Length: 342
Image 1 (tube, one colour):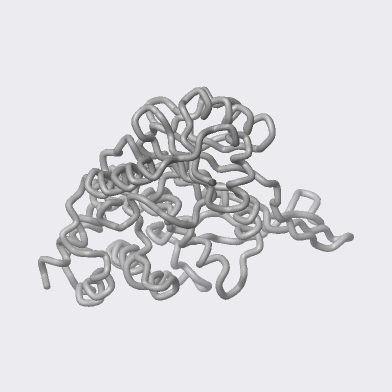
Image 2 (cartoon, helix red, strand yellow):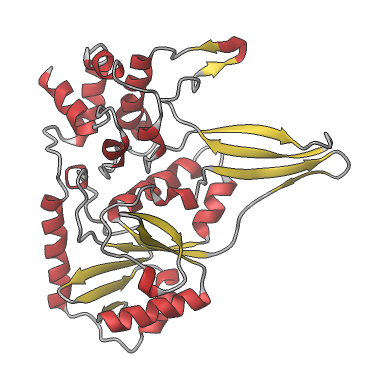
């Protein structure tokens, strides 16, 4: 059986063992908040975190990465990161976002850089037991996840249910072979945790189901909310840069001082930034803030879903709500307002 029941001491010993054998990225405290980073020992891992500052997508699509290097004499060479790693402590809503990104980066022009990192990652998901102030994953169907992960950990009482889903996950769990198999009773208790989290992870009251977002956005194209909210927007792009499902990027060549070598790099970009839509001739086809503000919602609720089987490109993590100092980026408030105009 690949589902084990372990106590804290066993879990700690197992994780310490992993850090000695694998490259492990885990959630750790950063001041009074939390962030993913290289993990050296189990004692630093915080499975009780509420939400990380940045989503775990940074380990698959880094803020800046080299795609290839070039040299006048030797030509060019692709740069592909292929070191295996374990990503430990991903919340279900972030796992849902990663699965969406997998679809995006594997369809059409296959993105070898993203997909190579993804294939070399073993992802350990942990069910939420400390709720963040702005999460609404319970309304987006992402408060728990039943597939797509390698290992799922659920805290039940003082012990943990550790569920290996894939061959990669089950291989990591060889260190838990002596632990008892989880009983049916424990698996039923996990379902209770999932049902409980559906209700707890609703810090904002979404009054319209996600399935209605595409039609609402289409009908609300000229709604005054875009102008009203955009008037308060700084165009800082914080809302899109902390989003686990935003993946826009810019590619440019950087030449070294010798003028004969350099790199092609890819960096994050965001549709809320002023020059995102600037093209040749210095023409900006989304110059107005209101157009950029509206585009952000159309992309998440109408455009991207057409690419990934209708999935809404918002998983309800609430990071945009927290990051926006102008207090205008809450998707729940915007969609509720659009629904009022039906």
